[in-house]
Image (cartoon, rainbow, N blue to C red):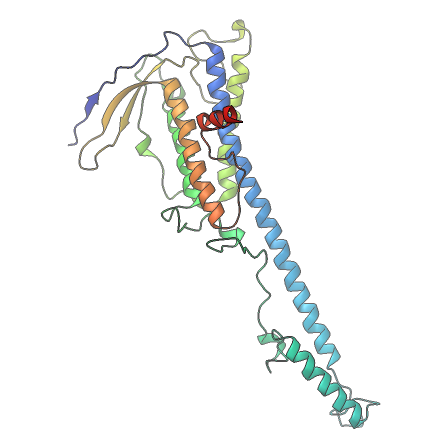
Length: 319
């Protein structure tokens, strides 16, 4: 049976947390999820453009082949369908020569290759990515493993960062129908893997938006008068779908973490505020990895995406 060791880290912490601080960290967490949603929505929009371009290219190819077929059609003339009506042999020779010259100028033509239209080359792929290190159709970007980022995928990074928020909030005792006096413990290593969120971009957007809305509702509830709140550290939920969340950033949390695969998890004493901020900063780290993957596939993101707040602050001071 695996053993659990306890590690206690002494550190200076504030003696109290204000509702302003709580609202701020909740707002930052919600904004982090919103940034991820907007990224995926941008990717979906790029997929739609790619699909439209592919459809238009296919239609143009079909029209070109139809036009060529109609232009080379013949009519029966007294049982002899080898000679077009009203055309002399000189005219036919001229038409044949023109067709040969056109074929030489159109190497993609099925006629030039001596094949039937049904065996012609497929339409050229839409949305070519000349700047991509690893060319990838937009429709495959969410699940295609990255060469530069250790075979990671956008979908797996999204699932991973969402799982940390989900696990922290889901393990809050009142969220499980338990008393707030119960010990609060969380183990981020017990996250989900190989789930729809990794492969279904619409499902991922839905899960991210759902959690984002719950965080924003909690911030809104914290702005209500004290008479409209519970006085036990949590706020009244605004919907049956909402989960209870703490207001006190200093509420103790025991963190379990696997630091050695050959041994049991180690426990750390932490606080809710510290863990919620960890989830947000952890998300920024994965945004940076997603940014690398997008650049590899030829879809550059904004400069500030995936950059830590402290780095952005440093850049602002240098301007």
